[in-house]
Amino acid sequence: MACLILLQMFSIFWSSLLVQKVHSSTEGSSYFFYQQPAYPRDCQEVFQQCTSNNASGVYLIKPDGYEVAFEVYCDNHLDGGGWTVFQRRQEDNTVEFGRTFSEYREGFGFLSGEFWLGNEKLSLLTNQKRYQLRIDMTNSAGSSFYVTYDLFRISDDWGNYKLTSVGQYNGTADAFISQGPASTPSAPSTPTDCYDVFTSGSPDGVYTIQPNGWTGSPFEVYCNMSHGGGWTVFQRRVDGSVSFNHNWDGYKAGFGSAGPNENVWLGNEILYNMTNQKNYKLRIDVVKQDLVDWHMNYDLFRVNSESNNYRLELGTYTGNAGYDYMSDHRGQDFSTPDRDNDAYSYNCATIYDDAGWWYKNCYTANLNNDAFGGYYFALYKRDTGTYHYYLRYSQMKFRPI
Image (cartoon, rainbow, N blue to C red):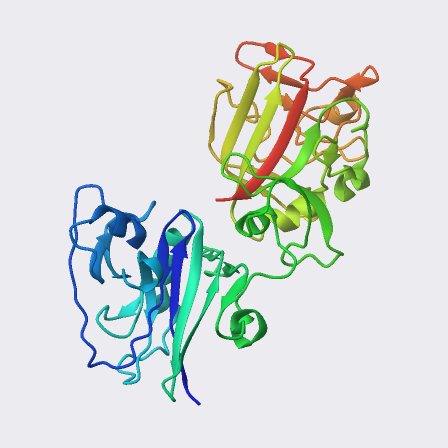
């Protein structure tokens, strides 16, 4: 028995995307082109905006982040309308689907017949809102059935357009995506970082992850879903209850607790594995003694291997601190009391209370420093010689670019 698979997806927010099955190439279809200065982002917005003509057909849309508008087929009759069709297969098999990765990235076929919309378009579409997937099929006997999944999202080119989520199943067919061969490209059972957790729709909290290439056991991290979501927290200071005075092996393995209000250093070996599986960016949040909040963002964050002393790679700074407080630490090796890798004549780690850090000579930011039995981590503005002592709070976190 032959099955023809079509995929559709719609947004719970409320936008819809759909892969529509057309049983015969001789069936008639209407095609209506819609255009206005502010393009709709998907077919649900087309359906809502074009009240004078809600026929199914070809329309122009422009998802968030896509440079130019492009044509899609909108199904405005099925299940409330507003579905964006991204795949269609027909009995005549006039379009070859045995294609290369780049062809699937760009898309192929004809919107009036068989086609694949394109993975790059799908990635931008499914990450601008929360979407539902619908798949309609007709078998060789003429019986039709469908399945729906309540959360549909794919990753970007860097993530090989991974099917990161399909959500819960409903419909009139078996859940073949979760149980059959089509499950192969879906998200791994253990997330590789907090962004994988975020794409499943999960809130802030402690989750178990296992990065690509990590040979140890899965481990717990705190996932922060603010500021766009999907941030993996690797450093946090909330009080002086956990000492950050550790040698090389302590910082390599990590210490503290992953809880929401706990002091933690995730571990340099974990940082190396995690930040080299994708391209990441860094955000640092601090609260000063006067209760003023500062944040510092860097558009690239990577930690090198132990053989390279966990050297820090940082991109360009933006934020509200008025100064790049990580300027001294960009490109620096990690130092601890028993491993002096800084550029200073003495070991900065022993000068500043045995705290491990990416010292140069010695710091413009020292968020791991302990002193006087309490917490005493600081920022230093080198051009003016201004210190900001006794920071009340710090948190460092990263997410994919």
